[in-house]
Length: 527
Image (cartoon, rainbow, N blue to C red; front, side, top):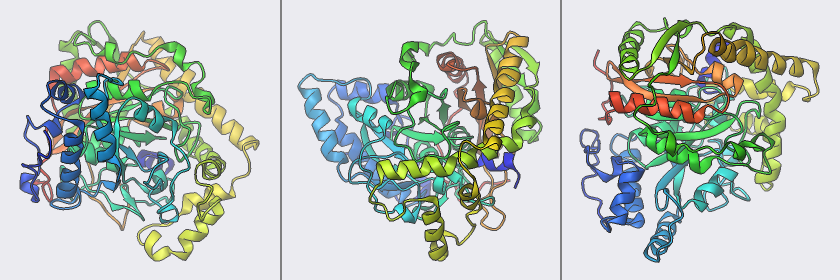
């Protein structure tokens, strides 16, 4: 597996009727409140037809029926034992006329590398942190609580956010096992935000938060037929999130609609004194909700990144049809090539390996001081001792490689980081946008979901994640249709701090195309 393959892994109270224990009956009806968005659920609560406690109850029952039983998606690694209590308190606040915002009483799932200072573990899927409770909330978890969201559980992920092996299987962790794709149970969800993608596709919560270093939000979102936003680095705080590398890590929304993603991003964004990258971001006054305009594509010049086509004929044909939708909404399309994408193939991985050990050890010291592991070396030793449970399918080559790297003052690290930023930013995305006077770039997010394979590991059908990931620039993926019943996403990528503009374009496309449909949990696809 080369570097590019690696990073594509991503480096109504008491009403529970209608949730079945069989795969054929598990998909929600189009009008089901569990498949509805934030605004629809809030309207039902305003009208007195629904409470947060009832909504949380229904989602928890659906998790039991669909995730733990029935088709067994296995996307939720742990549910919050205090979720119903929190929802009840938020209902009391609503009854008293106190609303914290648009997410008041709305259930959300967090990827299990986001620290929560509660009775749930924060483990990154590793048995080394099983049962370890974080000492405090990650900044984004605290913002969600302040906004009135109900954190109902944690989602499974590719262990250590897929920064473990050169031959890993996405969606598998020692603690959580294998997450399965709701559109075909023998297919992979991609990763590393695998559980967040599958859970939202299967309507196990209204919203989910994933994290990305390279592809870990947008790839599972595409593979699971949902919307994903990887924001500009620094728009959303990284503090309290188990890291890979501070140069590229960020949290972001994973939802069933662009509108929900915008509302969630608004709640997640903001300055954090513990994260230097967020300083000044508040001055940009993100108004994601205001970007939700059906004319968001009108007059936009969009570059079709042709060097990210050609990996899968069926995907290319599907996306070509969707380009006509962009044109019909007033966009001007220009065929382009994103330059110099081959010039950070190796240096990207080098930076991730250099930053992984010091960043992870700093997180352990700050958020899990009582954990049985303190260092990268401890984790490697733990996995080796428990190899039958932690390494039955693949090893820990990336952990070993990261352990061997010297400090961040090394010449190789500084040169690799400078190389990445040069060729992904000013001589990459910014160059092509400037030369062609473009507002954004589009391309297929990636190929359709592959068969989960513990022998050969992951195998992909293309990916558009790396340019924006390496640059730290925003990337939005929207469901664009299906090939052989498997979802495919269309990506919108722009320059730094163009998040709201991309949301506007993605929303206009989504409203004109309406491609997403709920999964039916087949055992496999019929070819």
